Length: 142
Image 1 (cartoon, rainbow, N blue to C red):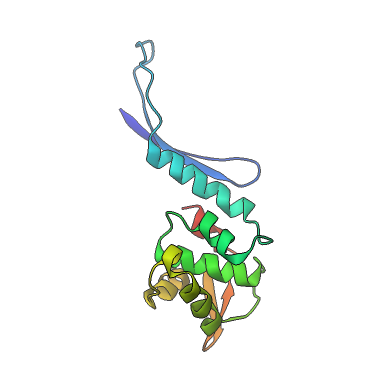
Image 2 (image 1 turned 45 degrees about the vertical axis):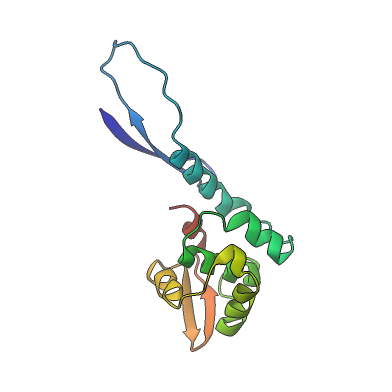
């Protein structure tokens, strides 16, 4: 029988995964850890440990791997805002920085901003200006 487990530690880091359960008293066989679970756990740690002192290209290289486009948008916005919630960043600045790193980030798509807003990671205070929402770190934890 399989079960999904979600645990939150005292620092608010969420760990989740799927486990195989056996009836009590039945012999258990060791299982290899699923690569997808390792990747998920690694992404959850990113939200807590983003290092904004790194140069931009090194920052993106380290943290963008395996992220969707909308999560990459949040990552670039977070870098420009240095993780400060409510700091206004011009959309043109985000796109400009994105275009400098298309090898790491891929082509920019306007849908990324909509998805980030729908997930309450970012918001627009006025046309052409984005801010991080208080839940922006969730982009790296789910």
